[in-house]
Amino acid sequence: MDPRTLPRDAIDRLMTTPAAIAALPSRPPPAARMCEDLDDATTRYIIAMRPAFDDLRHATGQIASLLILQAAKGSATLPDYPMLAQTASACRQARDRVFSMRPPPAAAHHHAHLSCATVLITKAAERSLAAIHRPDDETTDAILSPLRAGWREMHSASRALPGFETVSFAATCCAAHSAGNR
Image (cartoon, rainbow, N blue to C red; front, side, top):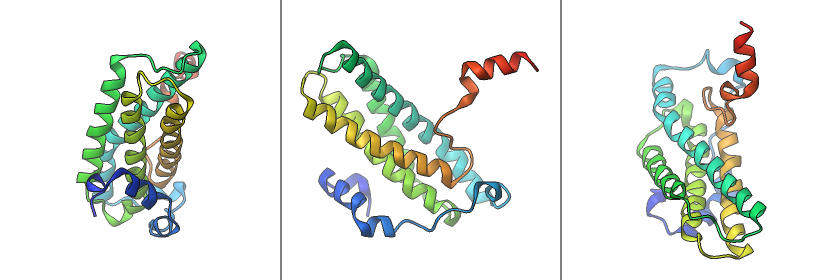
């Protein structure tokens, strides 16, 4: 079953049912052991999926930032930024990349979470793009709900395999200060 061909409401129902949750592969091994247990196929999977994960992470931040800007301005209308169209496009590309990949057994748990995150964050991006000129709280909630759920899935995916951090501390001001001290 390819999630890209399902109606949106069917995807929503599938991802929240106890059967869908029970169908997730078993929990991954503790992070300390993960790197030792990586086989070549899993390493290739990590390398192939990292750009999609990063695109989704950035999209989540961009959509959340626009919602914060919207709230700060006291306007229920999302700003008409070209970034929104680029974000939706990046999500669709990430979706294509994720759903074209057959994960190795060791990456199945990660892929299940990343697949859910992809559907949810893409839905939030598309709703954001469609809702630019619809000023109501219901529309904002319709964007925020899948965005939050998608971020939870991203966080779960980040714990399933190494190399998928939801927050990168490499670009923080603290990282720049510590780099100068070396």
